[in-house]
Each structure stands twice: as structure tokens, then as C-alpha cells.
Image (cartoon, rainbow, N blue to C red):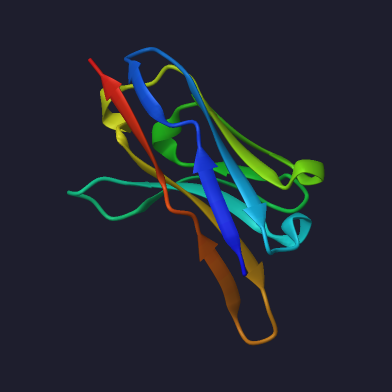
Length: 119
């Protein structure tokens, strides 16, 4: 069974940094597109960043060059380096794995990790 386990969240002051990790198992990690999404109680889940199997990346506009997504296929691990954090970055951050199959999209989510940024 697919399992995605996030870690690295916590409480940080504005302007600080955090590195999130997502350990994947039960999937052929190198063949999955990976992504980070975030969600607050008042908003829909929104895309933060994605990375393809060949490490092509895409970022949401609000990242403004502050975040970097990366992957280590040898360790089956996805990362999100977050610098210059702002209070509006406060959210639960989710790891996503996605692979195109014959019949559709095979998609899986982690349990999420809380990031809280104080003023």
C-alpha cells in the first residue's frame, strides 16, 4: 500500500526557514510526479510546488522565489525548503504523489504536517 509520511513542520517566526520532508513507500517513486499542497480551514487545498520524474519544477505565484522543491530518488524522499516564511504561509502542508495509469490518474496523499508562522 502507498504511504507518504511528512515531517519537518513546526512553529517559526516570520522570516525564518523550515525544510519539509516526505518519505514515500509502496510506489515506484522515480516514476511519480510529486508535489506539495497546503490547506487552511478557510480555503481550498492549493498547490505550492510540483516536480516531475525528471526534476522539472513548477511553483505557485505566492512562493515568490522563497521555496524550493526537490527530490532524492535514491532515498524515495521529497523535500520543500521554505525560506523567508510569512504568517500567511501558515497551513497544513500535504505531500502528493501522482502517476498516469492506463485507466486514469493514480494519486495519493500524506497525512499532512502543520506549519505555523508567527508575526
